[in-house]
Amino acid sequence: MSILFAAGTGTAQQEPSTAAYHELVELFHDWRGRNCSSSSSICTCGNPAYGTSYVTGKYLLERTLADYAKLQEERGEEFVLREFFDELNAIDNIPISLGRWQMTGLDDDIRNMTE
Image (cartoon, rainbow, N blue to C red):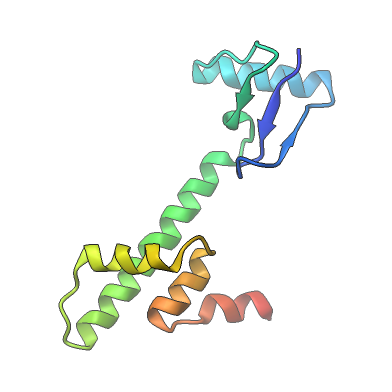
């Protein structure tokens, strides 16, 4: 059996190297109701931290949204959710901490990474 696992990014793939790992993955897939017994299966759910990255991303996005809305309010401007997402999408695919910095001027995340 050969199972490929996307390591949360959809691009980096690795093949499990131990029987224990195979057993753990099979258990995980059985629990999740997925069957990855095919030799050509690609299972993005094989990384235990996969869901955690979504939770972290949601937190970072919500914080950026709150900071952006607060700055709009402080400037006396109306906050429009569509405008927030239009600006965020125009920034393209960069880390949310850099997008937050660009959209709000708040660079505390960047400073924390460089200290």
